[in-house]
Length: 102
Length: 496
Image (cartoon, rainbow over all chains, first blue to last red; front, top):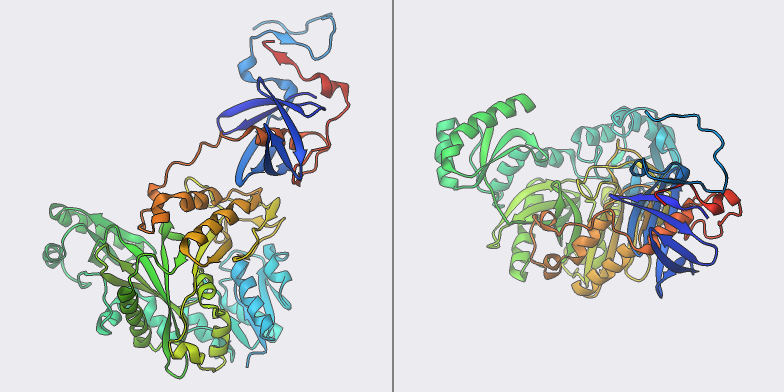
């Protein structure tokens, strides 16, 4: 599954959810399990509730509420990425370039 | 006997008053501005009358529309709740003039307590201690002498001010003359009246109030105190009873003063006398709220009474219950109220939005008086109070533990609230010690940065963001891991 770019306060992370109960928050690989309406992570079960309103995602976790913002397009990358190398999501050959530098 | 009661309010207090009325076999009439047509207080009432569209002034504050609603619905009594027109003597008179029963104090008593200076003079005459201060109407020369007598710091107050407005602090005698000139100028600009007076500033004080109740037979009693020192922006957010600050002797003295204050104005019905209590246990009359108080429920919980029932019975002509008159009521255990506000937890400014998920705490000794539900739209045109959590337990320590647990069970998603502030208050050693003042909230430890969340929250957010995930629920998106190859191969990666 493609990563979801999420922002919480000053922190932005790409979070990738895999099918087999594995997730990646940034560079960290994390095993998780759904349990009784919550999530078990690292052997600890967290009580969870979520709600989505457009790109805003609200998460209640163990009594604390967090308001995440989802990047409007995960494929768009971020401004910080500009100028870096690009890797296409599928293999292919570049046949023609319609833009020029500047 | 009241047959049909119009509740001239909205939100949690309209729901709360309606519940007791229906228990008493009284039909209820809700009123609502068009934006509130689907609100719980409307749905839970026997009858409902629209106040039409428009501003607060054109709806809940419109005496004409409220009286017309009462006429249309066939109501025979009006309960004002708190806020809005609850302390408006002209409204009380208009209700009575329309032949309806006013569930509140006599308008004359409201007049006596409504004006700050008038109430202060009345209380002084009745022997109730007031904050040391100067008389109004003195010239600057006399006020400079009064400043020396009162001591510093002190407050310059506008005679026509109120609600925290028109006040300025002076720390040194040398600053008083210039501050008086500025105070007069500001008072004239803000209130059209440049009259000012001086009042001693009681630093490190506590805010303690007494519930009082009177009936038409002349009985006036107090129903003990509520500690209201946990405030932000001069408004309460946590209240408790009994106050951890009062000795039995101080409680008795303040209770007597509260009853004297109510007697002095011929009070009937439910009211609250507010005091400032100094570090040396001196206490001073602050003001009287001539209505049911937001925090009345903690008194109900420790005394096992229903104050709204008593209001309705007294309004209908009954005397206060025998146990009350005989002074046999005794508080049992400890109760704490926590106010849930739709507001920014840092700057405390009101927030708006739609409540997407709402789960109230439950369990023994837990009561929630709420005016909202899932789907409620919170605007900024009304008071941002959403609900009140009231907990009771056998001891203060147990009540705090219960409150912590209940706050951590409260789920409100979609609108920013002060839940984190309430949790921080309950965790604060200063609060736990019981030795806190009105400065508690300003001294709370900084709350965790908004960017801190456990991994589980990040994963839950990603699950909720997945295409096809439910928009709300325990763990939304739990089953949504799509098979689309474009989804599974991921997006463009930069810097790989």
